[in-house]
Image (cartoon, rainbow, N blue to C red; front, top):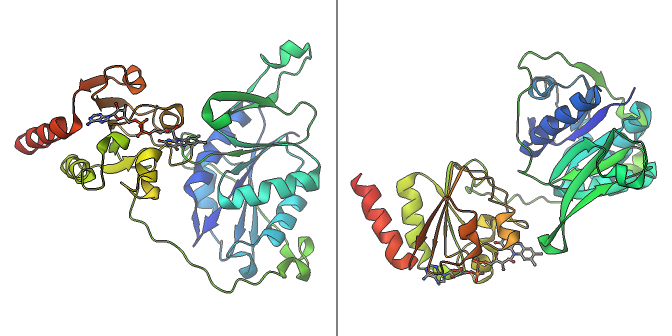
Length: 337
Ligand code: FAD
């Protein structure tokens, strides 16, 4: 029976955010196909991990639990997932477009001799593109991904490929619990049957994890600055406003490239995708690569001295003026109210 398969990443017994997003997207596809949602997770000490995964409506969960599976190494993980995919034979396979997913998915696609649509931002089941080819497919996965630096959105269908495989960008799929009490069938994978000693040839000597206190994805309010902010020092104004509003500071790539703000605060196609309740864009022109990462904010306020700035077309409110004048006024107002 056709199924939708999601590869879940886990670290320190916690299922990654991206995997929760993928499970939600996978469930929506599975419902359209009237197919089961199947997931797989590999790591160590995974007893009880199903409690984090089942609520997304997962019907079957494959668990590869072995001390050698954490931290991630390409060969054993690829061998394990490939074995399960050959056995399960799903119609659709989803990985996160993370460093793990980007490493694993192409390797597995080549082992299964199927295509891979990388870095997608929209997934659906449908036939309207297919009809153009006068073929009667009605249940193919179609994926949309930005191409040519985000200047076009490419619609991609893997016609005769099986399974249809895609990696999905972080933060673009809405996370949705399907049923908190959903029962999943847990299937333990016998790791030694899928991997051999040579799969562990790579030894991890040292691992450096960069600590970060930046959480743009969950911030309800973001004050983002662009090249128009003018300097690192001027970004203090934005930080001040963000502090008063209880939000985070973000930036455009031009602001990051100019050294005004750290790279881990970049928003957009090659940065983080955000969906805050309020997004204040100060001195940001609104290039498509930037708006791709913030256009789903519930409310957008643009502060720009150019009334024709493209971001204004997307904004709910536009303040035309010098941000060096406007932002101190906002700070004063919010402090007093
Ligand atoms: P600008 O386009 O220079 O705009 C500055 C704005 O500030 C202008 O609108 C100006 O009117 C206004 N301004 C100037 N002075 C003031 C003032 N005193 N008060 C008020 N307003 C003022 N960009 C991203 O942001 N995120 C990405 O992830 C990203 N990925 C990319 C990936 C690729 C492959 C490529 C090719 C580009 C990418 N870019 C990305 C870059 C993107 O194309 C734009 O160059 C960038 O977003 C522009 O940043 P900006 O709006 O801050 O700067």
